[in-house]
Length: 213
Image 1: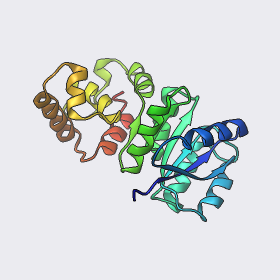
Image 2: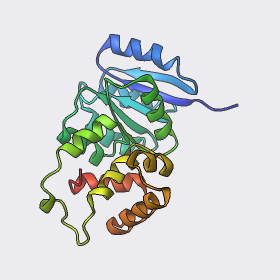
Image 3: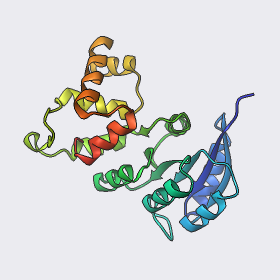
């Protein structure tokens, strides 16, 4: 029997919690095990239940989603945080990623995208929606200010990073960019070599910290 992904939900709007409870109940392989309306309440309740993915609004009472994420890294390091919010500015997104958030979605997301994000995080991956990546990409500084490191990334390589953040496979990226699978894998190897990282999340965190998007 397949074990369901244990979900905990944090939001300060009762009607949103009720709606999400019903929605999550329709997603196969997911089990909502608890809810809270504030950060401290969430930390307390998490001590009494087994949780894999915590879905949290950015702005909640007592502590925001970023502060909650930082606290969870100390008390519940195995819990993956997925921000589900109306906040879609580049500064807020970067701050969340730097704090250790593994996924970031707009509340305008779809059920299918939410399900994909949950499953990605439960499997130890990351998930940043296309909307989020668009916001980060649009905030790019000028080309000459992009690269504080020795070996510059190309614009194409930044596009590939953007698609990696969306958990696309090599074949999906090839189709999206109209390139061969071999070319995509070459870009991926070059990106990891240039940035000195060895995982998708380390790659995204590095890119955010250095404003590569």
